[in-house]
Image (tube, rainbow, N blue to C red):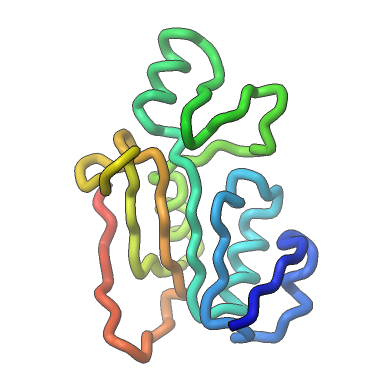
Length: 151
């Protein structure tokens, strides 16, 4: 198994189509500036793309913003506004909308709480989300269970 580390915003175009079985973008969507380009290139060079990110719409973040009027600091968003590496804050719904607009197929979606998997209203109760993506026209060779994420 090979693992490559590189600048994901500027060097993915160097890889040929279908170079990898999986491209993993864990905890990076909130830190990259060219999200559209990074995801598009990842889908080009990988058969599947796994994306994990903190859910900014988690109810604790909403409460902090509403009642304290402050940028949230949580387990999945542990930085103060002045020293955060995050350039954007996305929610599960934002990401699902992005995939629909870009015709990207969500093969699997997993929503994580502090200690359990979140099955009810993940955009409110999940701290983190993990998505497995392909291009919509991709036909998996093995029988994957396609999961339609709930709202």
